[in-house]
Length: 320
Image (cartoon, rainbow, N blue to C red; front, side, top):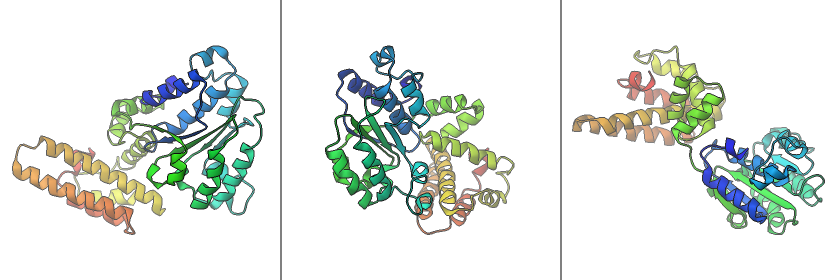
């Protein structure tokens, strides 16, 4: 329920206002960092729109028990589509399973569905996850459908890169901004997922306010747990644990660089000696350079290895 969505009180309040007033924007954009609860909130809003429990609806929420709620939770409701790459991979067009962005064929299929009347619910709800990944042809195909949707239709676009979306799409959507989560909230959520308190706290501190990033941070710390950060071999051991696929390796190297940067910044803020502060500042500038390099066509393993060699005197304190 909305009570399970932590750290996004402002967005939830606004959605409840729409429900209470009965004035539902027919095209909405949920934007904010990856892993802060946008998609979960969108799914819950779809349930709240179609919940048949009057008591739950009066509170501006969903019961999660009625047939409509359970069908949406299970992704089998005839008036509900959650379009992501996994759903797109099941669609009947050539090479659907290989596509790494939302393509025009997928948009054509879901927009055709949007023209049908609601069968079981009060609203048809189509959620497009990672909406920024739509090619321009796909975005333009969607545009005319969100301009004049049927009265029982609600589109929710979910994006962590609002700036990458077409201005014409953004201008036709009611935007809800989702905040990065406080470390304590991330820690609390990780603990409910089964992480131990110490592991959850460490991962939360490296998460940047994102649950998905926190989970990756926890995996990173687990992978390097047997490596001794005080030894000269530490950079090579860390790099040996990077994924073999380039996108994953880039993400993991970027995460490790963020952990380095956070540690260096903490040391800089506490340093009493100007010479030490200047040395830390130079290291931080190098980490910023390495972060840019990882995003370009440079080996993430080489970049991370170089960065860890540069910070060798502090790695034990940062990664202990």
